[in-house]
Length: 288
Image (cartoon, rainbow, N blue to C red; front, side):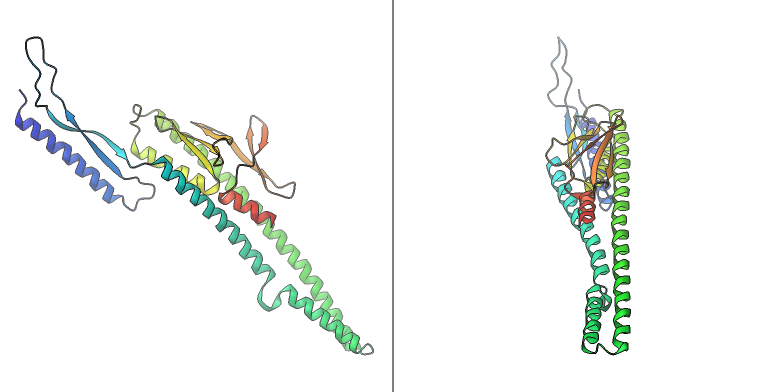
């Protein structure tokens, strides 16, 4: 027969674990990537009994059946789409502000210098016989030509900077997908179905969030919590990560625009699925 003290002991242990989970949530409320946990309690049923005895209907107490993360795939996907759109707009704005500073540096902008040059030509037309207006016009012309050359160099440097940032972003995406593949392998090698360590799942989601800042993606989860990622929000884009197998992302600007492509088996396949995130923002900035 089940002891009343044993039932009480199981309740104390179960609720002590539940309080520990609550304390863990409070302690990690500001931890980046941490998802709230919740302890699921389950009755400990009695034995089935035997041929000559009936099973006890009183039960044996309670236990913590599982500690689950607070996770909603739909909400996480919506948040990632929003983050990708924000990163695209922010990166484009940064490049646009740099261009504005080049074209409109207060009173020394190109428009003002063009105005001064034509003003000097007007002075020459008013006094064609004077030498001084001609000298001033030549000097203003030289200054205007120098400004055009300087502006051209600055624009080339800004475009080269966009290319460098795009290269860094592509490298970051490849590193993140490779790391996510390693996390997928660790998830597969730990526990049983539906019982992957919560810390690994938190790390998985944090890496996915980081990838989503660079490009729009579609994420699919297996019953073990392993994430597969494809480019684009349509769900039919090229797969860049299948469990632990990742595809390398690259880019080219040989045609005058930034074109992203996937490299697999020595072949390169261009993709048009990158429409948000840092990569899309840099492509827009390069084309402006």
